[in-house]
Length: 348
Image (tube, rainbow, N blue to C red; front, side):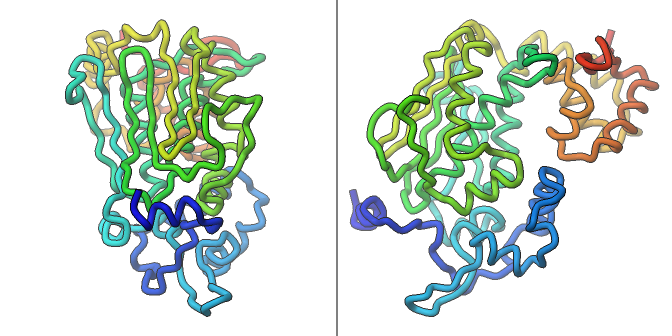
């Protein structure tokens, strides 16, 4: 272990608070801050941050700080990771990357790969898209409400590896889908050592500013709730509850796929045929939102309008308006009651 890593491990300070005095708003991805703030508004319409200027938002959320010992002030590493343009992030944290791999047939290399080096907000989206591309979603009712088991489980796994990574450590974050299980690894500054379970879990934020932004956007739960959700829904999703979270210098998460291990991904033969049928019916007249709705319904049969609104981060009235167009075009159809029904592709 090098001296920098040893210091980070023993330090009580959060390395996400490292100040970069020459990091400015121009170094952020265009539109990313307003996008994040809109997601916070959508998640909590009465959030106290909603009325703040961007400058006050940065300070209140801890993304812009003043070091009281030295007087140094500026945007922090957490601001850079959340909002920065890829080339700016790489200049400050050259080892930062997230590798998403599918290893079902080619175990030596991979069947599919996504090499992610963008900000954490976009990295979350890319990882969720990778999951949607390669893992199925089972129909599941909680009470009388349909929920996505796949999203419930993997949004927590993905948020965990992005929020709690120790970014001064050069170990790359890995997210790999194997035949029978999903494994994620990320550099860690452990507070406990060993296996974490809902019974022994003592939540401790590794990057509290990053965690706070993700929570306010609705992309993660309060500390500890996420891991409990993975344990809670794993049995219903895969038939197995043999989930493991191992906290060492490298944090390792393993989620079973159980009876899904013969699944061939969204690009498998059956799904290829479905894609072909869908593409035959789609045309250039569909707008971006309508295409996203069709794609989401294809991967989440039975999803309703409210769930579409949340998943796509699009207002409900806009979703309903576009759904009306797609129904008239006979691309989708509603099945089931108004309370528990949802939308399906109509490609026959």
